[in-house]
Length: 311
Image (cartoon, rainbow, N blue to C red):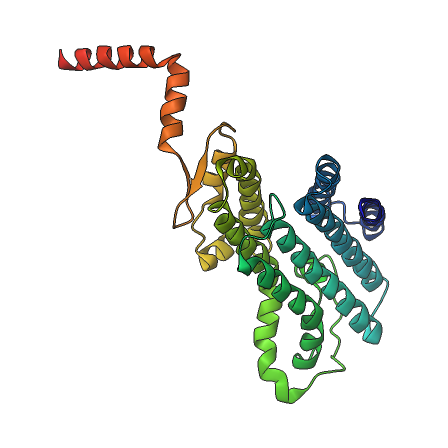
């Protein structure tokens, strides 16, 4: 399994690098996404080598492969559009890329909801991933049925909105006018799935965190914060950072999370009912003792301070 996934990821990475060159996309956000997903792929390789029996490690590797594939096929579609792809060819190619793009979200959710041990702990983990898988398989077809024009795949759409690509307007050959009222909601789902998928998955991860013992919590805390930073910071740049944060009303500010990530790794983290990341009071007292040198010194300094205040 690991050898197959390694070949998959390496092939996707090579195709992605070639696609960036052919599409002239080195000045876009593509290289940044490439580095992030390549790092995920390499982390999956390391995790499956360190813990071969850990299903969460395998899911991480699958996510890295799916992410690289998502970018590679999206760039390939952009190259074809630049070469004049339109008509039924664009309809078919766009549907395939959309399905792979949605599959990328499924792989991401599957990796998140079983971290860190790969063991199922909540019923919601299974039905959430299965629901995303059903959406990934069916949404491209439903968009063709309920929308009069083909809805471009994400990367193609973003490139068109940025003015880097002339996206063709192609009439859907499967459009059914009687079902047109459903198209607005389905297109809204398409537009938000890239945000809803990881955000909801991180929420499930936080619920799993409460069921873990201290050892597993320690192991899970920092990757959870990294996922929060990635989801809440990078994803909000897709459709406009300020507007998206305002509409989502996110309870955790990304700058607060980023500051927490830079703090000492031996501190225990807790997530309260409102989703706010907090430090345990016991750890604050412990770190105070460490800074003072030993408990006796802390008490002596506290007594001296109290006497000074009294005087």
